[in-house]
Image (tube, rainbow, N blue to C red; front, side, top):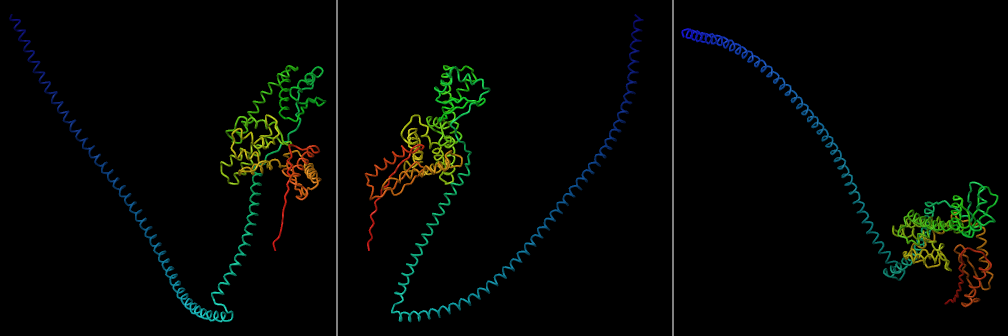
Amino acid sequence: MDTTIIVAIVAVAAILIGIFLGKQLFAKNTQQLVKDAEEQAAKTIENAKTIAETLKEKKLLEAKEHFLQLKTEQEKEANQRQQKIAESENKIKQQQQSLNDKTAAFQKNVNEVEQQKEHLNKQLEAVNIKRAELEKHQEEHVKRLEKVANLSAEEAKSELMEAVKEEARTNAMSYVKEIMEEAKLNASKEAKKIVIQTIQRTAAEQTIENAITVFNLESDEIKGQIIGREGRNIRALEAATGVDLIIDDTPEAIILSCFDPLRREIARLSLQRLVQDGRIHPARIEEVVEKTKKQLEEQVMEIGERTIIELGVHGLHKDLVRMIGKMRFRSSYGQNLLMHSKETANLCGIMAAELGLGQKIVKLAKRAGLLHDIGKVPDEETELSHALLGAKLAEKCGEHAAIVNAIGAHHDEMEMTYIISPIIQACDAISGARPGARREMMQSYLQRIKDLESLAMAYNGVEKAYAIQAGRELRVIVEADKVSDAASDTLSFEIADKIQKEMQYPGQIKVTVIRELRAVNIAR
């Protein structure tokens, strides 16, 4: 028990000693830490003061630099303003000087005008004095004239006015005549100018249609197949197409002869198919020809549609479009009908535009130019002329009345009632009269015209005979005392019958007999 108490006492004493020693050590360490912290704080404060001083100096320097920069800019702006003010003052001084000069010059002019005015006033006073003197002398002269002529001033004035009026009337009539002659001359010049410009702007190339087509072969060996045994194949082809096939010694070529270009084209395409296929016999020939005809009908429509699109003509009836396509395979005097119609359409459009007729009339003229020879490709033959037939077809297809009249009147077979009618006629003549457009030689043409007139002049009572419209019409002027009205009809029939029997001519010729009776008497 004592040992335990001693141990406990010793333990307590040891704890107390440890606590005491710990307090002593902690207090010593605490003082050291406080001392170090105070030293560190003093150093931090010193560094902060140093940094603050540095920042303060830096800010002061930046402020000074900014101030100097602002001061420089302000001085620069002030100098610029001063320079502008100086320039403005110089300009004002110059303007003031110019104004002063102008004022001085104006004042000088005013002085000169005042001097001239004064001078003119003096001259005016002198003129007034002279006028008064002249009036006085004139009165005296009039009194002496009245005394000599036994006429009053009013009577003399009236006679003088009548004489002046008569002279003015005569001069006016002369001037009117001159003006009318000049107007006619200028109108003729303007018309020629428009026609020339139109021709120059549409200078199309001319191609002459032939009556033959050359079909080229790869070798002469195929000629025997085309002819066939005893000529059966060639006879079948000619019978089916209506085209003459000429097979001679010409190397690698067969000649297709026919006046109808459409039939020649059918024969050419059929022959081309047969040669490519290699099966050439009568049955096959008929089959191919029928197929080719149907194909060509489609091609005709395509040509017509392509043509109206090219010319900008829209809204045509399908029958008219097909007829336009058929023109590709027709010719007139050797001139391809489609090329002629296209050229005429372009000429009509240009001429109408040159005349300033307006866009609507230009379109109508172009449309009529394209359709003017539509009567040359009818589906059925008729006794009507191509102009009248074309007008009938156009009217049937719902075309404008102006177009119908232009088609029917382009050979003077109808009365022209619309402004585009003479344009169509003129452009048709221009297209046909181009060098190389038509095959007919000038000499043969002139000879045919002379023969036509001579035939009519051979009849008794015929005074004059004129072939007009390129030989399409013959006008016969008879003597009224030798040929009666009833005899005129007979004479017209006899001349037409003789022309039909004795002459060769394209198309038809209209014979017109004119009888005029004039009774003249003079009253004296």
